[in-house]
Length: 413
Ligand code: CTP
Image (tube, rainbow, N blue to C red):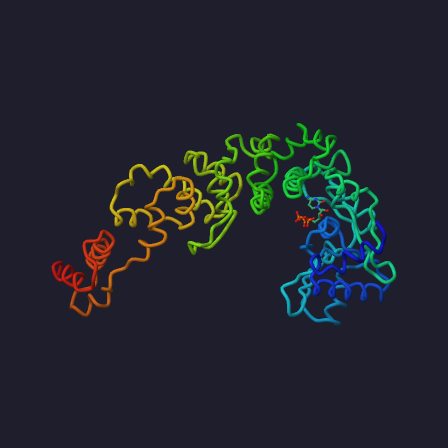
């Protein structure tokens, strides 16, 4: 690719925001002033060449990235979070949400499969060679007269053009089996194919290392898949590669009938969370024992575990609630996370669940504890009983105005 073509992409505000363009120019100028070769890499280059808006700014230098970060903060402000051990730093750019990842070019060696690698400072070529796929192993140089030079020693561009996800060497998945999930994610996101020799490396050895990965690392990969637009389809592919059973023998496939429900519908004023919704839909039909096993295996937070468990309990309990009065529904549902109720509504289409979400949960009597005290009632459990009874009367249509409420209240005192 000619330098001019790269420059044209670089100056396209639909791909790189003007603010990001300025930022890269500042970094490039600073790196050039201290003769430090400096590059953008990874997903940035991949997405730019695909004509897609870039997300993260990952900058690699052949030199000390923390030192460069310090100089940038001195000159432009903002804050630096350095990690001296890895020679990396986050630059929190002033007056913006933008964070730039500054990285010292490095090579990596895996002492054991599946554990994090040992890193040593090195050249940009070595840094590209430590990466997962050819499409992620390209760099564009930023400093001085080199600005716009594409570095593509592993032929990533050709794979980008032909739509192939290809590893850089045969041990890639054994070194780091999370890359198998990443490969499937790129297939789904870009409509690519895992190249056939690469696919054959999803073999018994790699899958054995995958099975031994920590719950946190595996969940992180599943989280990223749930963040994708095509997550259900990607999970279908994950299942067809037998990856799920390696995570845990009881791990189910994602029910494709629920695919459309992962997209959150914000109209109901429920805080949107794709991941929680995804896991609830995925696990809600499992037995309580299996849910327990999986939330442990995947190291779910308490909140996530509760959401999944509540959705499964509610779905199972629906037949018993069917035909109940609004007050019975409301008291049964009130203890459950709203998002769990919504997930069950999406799959079961039980109208009472929607009525609860949009109406019933907001129904409260006019009478308050304070009002009961003013009437001379001694504070105690009776307060709760009275207020619950009044609320039920509103919910079930026994009363429909304040006068009726007072009348009912007085009949109870
Ligand atoms: N990388 C890798 N092996 C991994 C994870 C990441 O080699 N297991 C490398 C890839 O070169 C990747 C870069 O680190 O491009 C940054 O990783 P990440 O931010 O996770 O990926 P992005 O390329 O930004 O892609 P995505 O859009 O999926 O976030």
